[in-house]
Image (tube, rainbow, N blue to C red; front, side):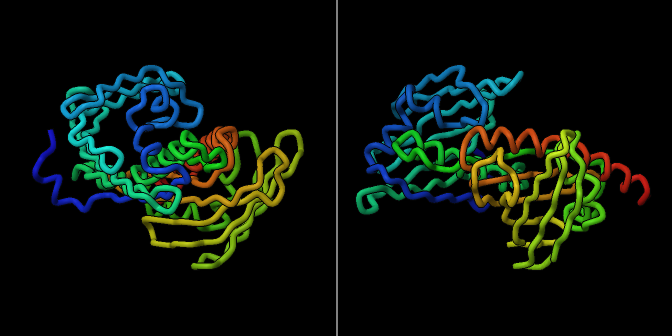
Length: 300
């Protein structure tokens, strides 16, 4: 059940334009055959169960297998006004807790403009960047489901570090720390150069166990010490990945001396590329966790 206190939190609003007309975009939200391909779908996930009772008072159950985990989503429909408006509750468990999501769709030339408003519960406000990235990725999936085959893919990762966020932020921004972790597992960092300012550049290289060298680089877009870092990312040398200019968003939240990191990479060209980057970043973040633990212990 939604709580009155939820309304005190500023809602999350995400907008996206679609090439498809409003009727097609709206129908995709209630079509069981389509929903399993994009709603709450993640790179590498497999749709396990979709159940939709498309009426006011009806509900949905959408499950996806993610490795060894079954991700579940439940909700009830509050408003159904085709092709303009859809409102529903959403939660991870059948018994709740639930938050409210409203979808508004208007014609935009030959296509559509969709506005998604998510009333997030107060206890989840620290995860707003993850919700925003999740919905943006979901709407990219909706675009692919309605005919935009080249819509980008997104990656969202979470990691907890045994160190204050000021130290974790330094690990993300100081070259001598980046040399310790900015590469996949079993790789070696070759160099890191950066100019930590808005519009400043960064560039780093790495070597695989087979001796192949890779170089990536980008530009700093946002720097909010020690909570948030946003920068572009592209590969200067990597024949394994399709060309793409992506964006990295790092959000750091500290609690009880530990740091919860939300990492988002958006703009990836293919699902295979998203999976490849997930593998690479997962190994890198294990290295980062070791470094953060070491620095945190030394700082005590």
